[in-house]
Amino acid sequence: MDTPAPPPPAAPGPRPGPRRRDRHGRGMRGPVAPPQVPLSASRAEVFADLVQDSVERLERRWTQLAEIDFLVVEVPRLDPSGADGGWSDDSVPLGGIVPAREGRPARVVVYRRPVEIRTKGRDERAALVHEVVVEQVAELLGLTPETVDPRYGED
Image (cartoon, rainbow, N blue to C red; front, side, top):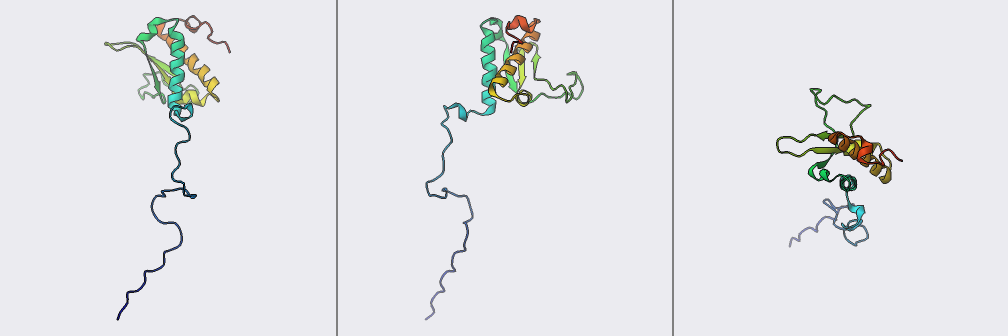
């Protein structure tokens, strides 16, 4: 009688495919922090919150800001035609404005990455964001930054 050959021994080493459990057999790890904790907010979300805080601070004094859209954009776009005045490595804009037109409200734009690169911590970033928002609102309203926020430039 012929007997079937035994299966070859398993090859040493890890099995191919995704690993389903950690090395101690406790299963996959969960998130570091629950969603309601600030640690789990992305950098973009935290930055948007800083802009919103700054706008709310100014809206108490300037109610017309409720009619303006405030946006956070990752980086400024360079217009190849030069219509934006062009910018160099020495002067990357931190913010900008888009005047109201054709039924669209005016917009104040804050560029996230240039602001983040120029700051080291949350407090410094919050101060710079507020400065940028104040400067852009002042330009949009045709006022000086000190008129928009009397504490502008104090630090």
